[in-house]
Every structure is written in structure tokens, then in C-alpha cells.
Image (cartoon, rainbow, N blue to C red; front, top):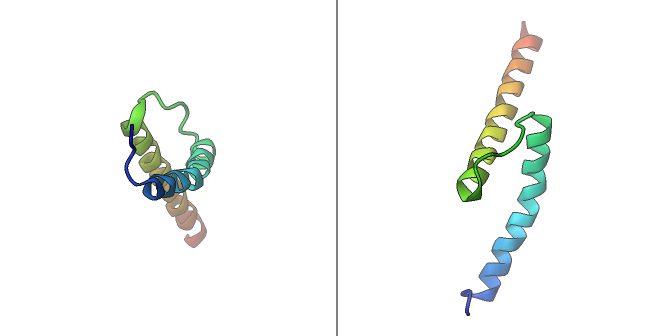
Length: 67
């Protein structure tokens, strides 16, 4: 069974390896809890929600400090 270009597959694996710890840390620090949606959709939702949570916390922090 072939998986396409081995260099391309390796490149994608390296990218995922570098991003996963960041998303995991953001999930923990932003209190997202358990991911109940499995698969690619669940991974995408966790990434988006982590980013949203981080941005909302930045906005609230800025509003508290500016007033």
C-alpha cells in the first residue's frame, strides 16, 4: 500500500507534531474540557474554540487594564 510522496507525508506529520502540544496547552489553560466530537471535525473545533477563548481573554484583559 502506498501513501503518496513519503516526503510530503513526513512533512505533514512534523507539522502535526509541532501543533498538537500548543493546542493541548490551550485546551488546558482555556478550560475547554473534554473533546466529545471525534475525528478531524473534533480536532478542528478544538483548535477554533481554543483560539476564540484565548482571544476573548485578551480582549477582557485589555478592557480591564484600559479603563
